[in-house]
Length: 72
Image (cartoon, rainbow, N blue to C red):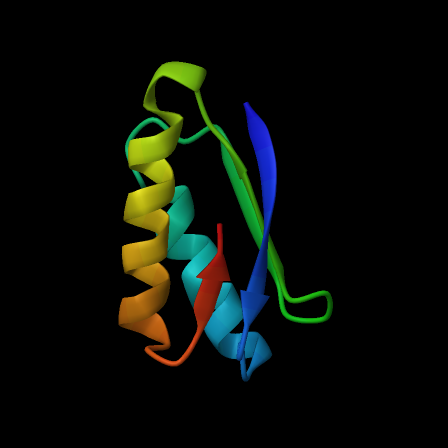
């Protein structure tokens, strides 16, 4: 499954790159991207584990930039 999520308060392109790198390392993820320009995150992961992978991605984002919120 591939899905896009809106991000709020993503403040810098460097943080977006760190988030993307960390999300791509999550076990089971096929692909991911975090765009500072569009304030969006795309996750591609297997349907059966999608929700748990999204939860991990949200935790990664909170760790890199605590003010950034993911609109689920």
